[in-house]
Amino acid sequence: MNQTSKLPKETAEQPLLMGPRPPDVHISFVRKQHQFPESSLDLDALKVVRRLRRFGHETYLVGGCIRDLLLGAVPKDFDVVTSAKPAEIKALFRNCRLIGRRFRLAHLHFKEHKIIEVATFRREPLDSDDLSSRHAAGNLFGTAADDAVRRDFTVNALMYDVEKGEILDWVGGLADIDDGIIRAIGHPERRLPEDPVRIIRAIKFAAKLNLNIDPVLAEEMCQSAPLMAECSKARLLEELFKILRSGFAATCMRQLQSTGAMKYLLPDFQASLEQVSYTSWTLLEKADALVRDGFNASDAFLLAVFLYPALEELIWEANDVAKAVSAALKPIAQPLQFTKKNMATVRNAYISQRRMVKGPRNKRTRRLVERDFIGEALDLLEITERAPTSIIESWRKLLMRQINQRKNVGVRPRSRRRRPPVRKTRTPRTVDNSQ
Image (cartoon, rainbow, N blue to C red; front, side, top):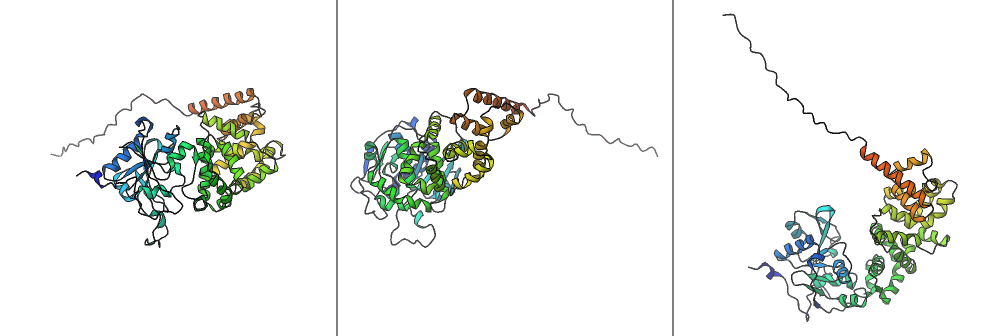
């Protein structure tokens, strides 16, 4: 018996929906023949898709990876969506870890810390569903069409059939990619209050992929910006770092300011920018250029560049720079909960700028190369252009010398001399001479 015969069939005339049809969503099912070269796809993701299909589960690549491939970008990760329930996924993969309570997901762990996320088709609740348990509404399983209409933007709802080389589209995502538009699935008045973090996501996708935001969506983003104050701080922090790592952070920050979202993301930071009349994101643009060129920037360095405009005056003019920066940094970062390690690195990088700008001219200053924040501090000094190139080069040479010394300290050559074998002492045999 062919196990793939269990897969449900869909037609363009009647998309398969188990849940209710949202009244503000126009569904028009399209299958487009489009064969992506296998070299452009992740091999581990392909193995996951094929294994799930081999055991009779409808499975596709989904979301951002399909969107990026169609737009000529290189996907950062490949997500999989399937009819298999979380427990069934775990039974098929030894490297599976189930996560989440609100949305039960499967994370498949591969080499080099790579994770492929596998989600089960979700649907909207029906009147007959039992929603008495806490997270029941988020774990109602449906079909591919149900899952597509639940996603945030049309360009993120595309699915790719690996075996047939077809793109499946229920909500007009292919047309919006051709038109270069970010559009919500359904009316933004309903979709943004469901999850206000979508405001940040829309800005990020538009900046990164050079797309325009639908005017109706853009207007509602401004109206729904105050709702971001009620979002999970962990999710807001995650999206902020995604923006900082994207290489288009300056463009995104301008959009966050223009929509009014920055005021609810980091209220004191926005107020500080207004007080110093800092309207340019020149420094962040330099960091974006480095990221796009392949510079491996740490989160602490990107955070230091991001917050620098609001603290620049204190860093260079305060009488007690350590006290002034420490007092100002914590409230500016609220209400987001940055890690203590990142905040300590940012603080120390700021405080050390005045000493480093004069070069490693004395023993006390040269000892900065022994501190764990020296890399971020030196990169910040270089990007702000507060010190001449000769000073930067002298710090680089000193830092490389320190790194080489660390490699050699405490390393002893392994002795080639073999230990002599341990011989067991034999108990001498006593001779009885009494006879």
